[in-house]
Image 1 (cartoon, helix red, strand yellow):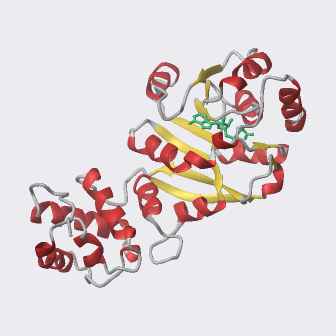
Image 2: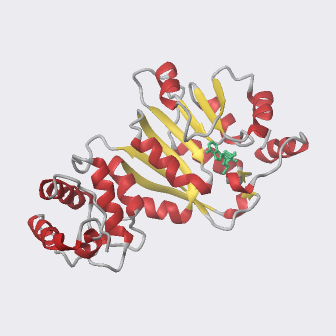
Image 3: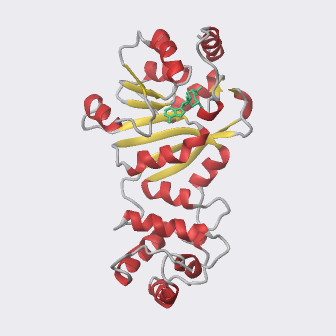
Length: 294
Ligand code: SAM
């Protein structure tokens, strides 16, 4: 079945209607589907998790190329169709779940013990960042992730310090992974057609992380504060996390980290954020994140 035939068959089944709020834009181009699976470098050796199978177009390619495949779909209306059309593949596990709540580690431990999995998905736009952050922060044994996302999000994930797209998301993703934008995808290859173009990104876990982060929670608080007010100097942006009178200590710790306090947060690399985290913890060992009540 071509992707379009599959989507048409789903629509003719009568039980499904596109739900905009679930980010349902289905891929219709077989070539893009092939490229998505190819970008993840999948072989029969790999266990793969697919987020949001939709009509099952990507899923079918994965089932043909990979070892065990877990497809996690939130929309109940899609489950009978997926079962009916893909149920003959013995390597498929299909879950009707919100991926943000699904016990992925349990599946990994059963189907890929001791070996990291790959994750693939044409992600629903409304929840792209929470999904990626959850997969990263939960420390799941993941080797590679290949995601179709909004082009703008792909650019943010892959951006370098000091560029306009560099953001808290760039830092968060790059702490864990090497990020590459694989290819762009036109809005015309989706049904319904989204308002924005997409891109495929490949995220590969670092073998050696770019910096040692001793307190990830504090690290991300500082990163978010630094990017929170883009036009502010770093010392002003970070001062929002502490009572006013402690600003001199913040300036001192930035100097100690060899960072000019008038720099903007968006010019800092991961190592510099890690250095600030280390010194912040030493400077404010208690009640580290008392927000400023100005
Ligand atoms: N993979 C299909 C394709 O490429 O044509 C569908 C992609 S569509 C952009 C996103 C899919 O994710 C939809 O099927 C949607 O119902 C599903 N979805 C949305 N939120 C989800 C969540 N929190 N957990 C699991 N699936 C979700």
